[in-house]
Length: 431
Ligand SMILES: Cc1ncc(COP(=O)(O)O)c(C=O)c1O
Image (tube, rainbow, N blue to C red; front, top):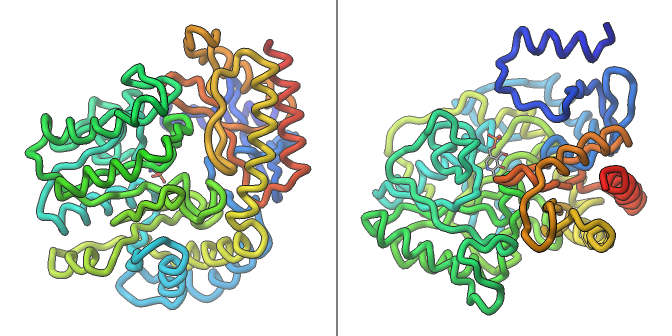
C-alpha cells in the first residue's frame, strides 16, 4: 500500500465523509515551498489555487516562518482578555491599508466568524435584524453563514435564519433578467430594492456582498453595480458589508481591496484567507462610530481571535506583499494571466467565459457557446488532466463548471507562463 492509499483509508475511517476532497483519487500534500507543493509520493505541483486564495506570499515563505518562530518562542496564546502588542500592531496596519474611515478591528479565526461578527455589528448599530445578501454568494458554514449563502449545495440541512433575503446577483454571463450589459442599465441592482420592499419590513440592518463572488465562480459585477447597490441599502437604512474574504489584500490588482475599484466605501469589511498566508485569522473592520455601538451591548469573546502567532504571520505576510507583490504587481501579473486565458478561449470552444480581476481569474466551461449549457464534466476532466500535468487549480460555481485560478500573489512571469502552458496542454487532452 503506498502512502496515498494509506492516508486516504485512514481519512475515510476517522474524518467525516462530508470533507469535500478534490480529484477522483484524493491528493495528500506533504510540503510546500514558494509556488510549489509536493504530495506524499514526491510529485511536485505548481500551485495556482494557493489553498483557496490563502497562501498569498507562497508556501513556507521564510519571512512568515521566521516571524511565526519568533512569536511562538515568546507567547503562543493569551486570549483577548489581555492586550498584546502584535494584535494592536496588526489592527493599526489594517486601519492603514483599508479604505476610508475603516479603523476599528475585531479579529476572529475564520471568514465565517468574520461574517457573523459583521452581521451582529450591523444589527447592534442599527437596532434592526433583517439582512439582504446575494444569490450565488457564499458566507461560510455556520447557521448564519449558510443562511447568507445563495447556493443550495452549501446550505446543508435546509438552513434558513428568518430575516435573511437574497437579491439577484450581477451575473452578466447568465443574466438572471436575460438582459445584456450595458443596455440593461444594470437592472439587477434594482432587485435589491424590490427584495427589500417585498420581502422585508423595509428597515434592513445590512446588505452584504462579495466584490467578486468567489465560491460562486468568480462572478464579476459591472462597474456601476456596487454604487447602485450601496445607495439602495443606504436609502433603506442598511449598512453595506463588503465581504473581502477572497478579494482582499491586493488579489484583484491595483487596489488593496476589491470594493475600492468602484469608489464605494463599505461601512463594514470582512477579510480572512490571504490575511495571514495560511494561519487561521479573520477580521471585521468598521468605522469608529459603528464599533462604538458594541460598547455595553453585552459580553462577547473570541478565545483564538487575535492570536499573537496568527497576527505575527499576518504582519509578515503584508510586509512581503508591500515589498514584492503589491496591488500594482498583482495587476501586471493579472493582465498577463488574463490575456493568456483569452488566447485559450479562442482555441478551445469549451471555454464559454473568462472573467475576474487581477490574480483572481475564472473560466466558465460549457457544452457549447450557443446554449451555454454548463459542463461540470469538462471541469472534472480538466481537473484530472491538470493534476497529471502537475498544476493545481480550483473550481466553483452553482453548476460546478467554473475553473478558479488564483495563485499566490508573489507569482512572477515565468510562473504564469508555465501555468498557461500546462492549461493549454490539459485543454488539448480533454478536447
Ligand atoms: C466570501 C467568503 N466569505 C466567507 C467565507 C468563509 O470563510 P471560512 O471558510 O474561513 O470560514 C468564505 C470561504 O470560502 C468566502 O469565500
